Amino acid sequence: MRQLLLLRHAKSAWDDPALADHARPLNRRGKLSARIMAAEMQRLGLVPDVVLVSSARRTLQTMEALKPFEGSPIVTVSDDLYLAPWPSLMATLNKVPDTVRSVLLIGHNPGLHELALNLLAPSTPASPGLFRLRDAYPTGALCEFAVAAPWHGLTDGGGHLMGFIAPRDLPGADQLNEPEEDHA
Image (cartoon, rainbow, N blue to C red):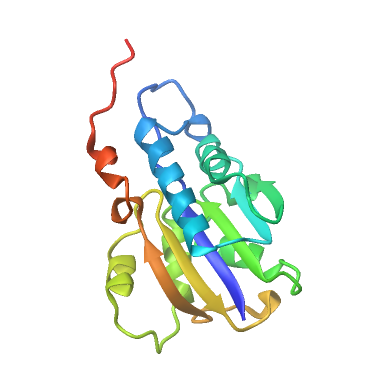
């Protein structure tokens, strides 16, 4: 069984209208939520062999907050993952070597959310995580799938939902509600 982890980048800043979308950094809340998610991933023992990450600044900063990675995974930064639609994300996963056990994909909505929904096996049992995933994929949220097929054979319905968590679900989330500091 293979493991697929889908992580949406943490909350980004919108305070500089002149900044290109690709260059937007994480805001204070995003940095904190990424650290909270990193701690939870470590607690759960989620250790990827390969990390695929969009080249956008906010996804790279989200990945940096997860470090140090246990086991020194292979990290691939790709422009093709920036705002990629779900079929492109699936095609990227289909190119992962079949010897890889666990993949972490750090990307953007709506493509990441649509990929997760398309991966759901038709027999996925009802659960709070499933209902939340169907409803939304908030910034910083992580979805874990078990995948039976080799990566090259991963298709729609090929994932078994193991869990869905958002930073607000985790210890320390109360700090996420604090107002942003004004750095005038």
